Length: 170
Image (tube, rainbow, N blue to C red; front, side, top):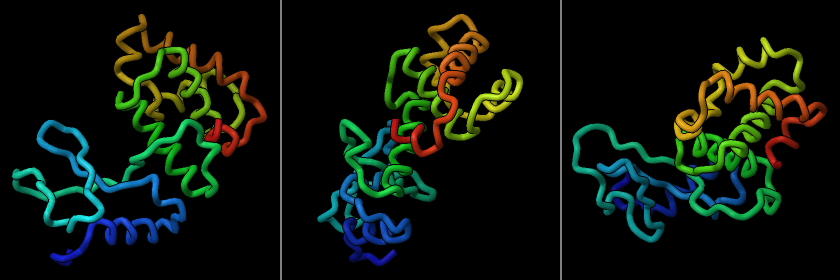
């Protein structure tokens, strides 16, 4: 990395790699010692930030920094997909909390976007085992994993005919 590289220039490089037109919603961040994201200040040189002092490789994360009320406000399909992927990950990791029924419904949309229309409980359960859709806080609230999966399937069976794109912007 060039010592005088501004954070805004690095963000521009990353955005151009993704061919991202709506880059204003995104930023670059690093994890501190307490496992919290710290955003790079765009007007500051990258190497002038107070990175964690631990030795090893520093990882910078390209993430959504500014959320909006509705994904429908976005114009570019790449931006929409990146928002969807981060929101899905953030709910699963517990960074964004939602009530259990919302988590189950979101899980159904992820399943529909990933697999298409419902065909059988057996196939859906198999896919759910591989998809990260149930955050720990939801699993702690309910009697069993099977119960949580059944709630997701309840919603999934109602989504027939929705395309992957429709599921993402829901």
